[in-house]
Image (cartoon, rainbow, N blue to C red):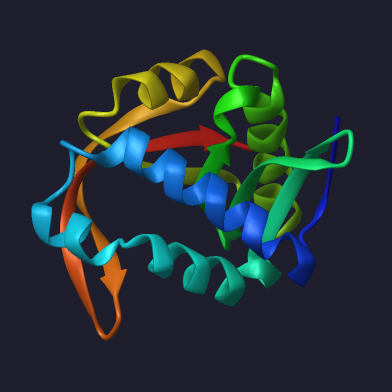
Length: 156
């Protein structure tokens, strides 16, 4: 298992992991308006657009998960379903924390959908604390949709 910067060749694998993971963690926990625009195609577009901010975990020759970090925010953390429980997610989260610190920030933060209890437990096990409820502005083109979330934080 290793981490590396994503390349354009990783975009399809990232998109597939992102789409499946997003649906698993968000359906029933985010506004229907957001679900309607987070189509399968939208994840392929977003993955390709965000590849420069993406770090992947590789197991063997396969992309097993990814993180997207921008500034002090860990924007996305997703692992392929078959890799859950393998340590890939913890490794990616630690890499994200390292990137936030290397960028000069003392604290990292991320948003987790309020109803996504599995993700919230994972972050807590990895030393993150619940900074409280807020509405995350999920970008959709030139506008945003407020999503009920919890802001999780960790000193890096």
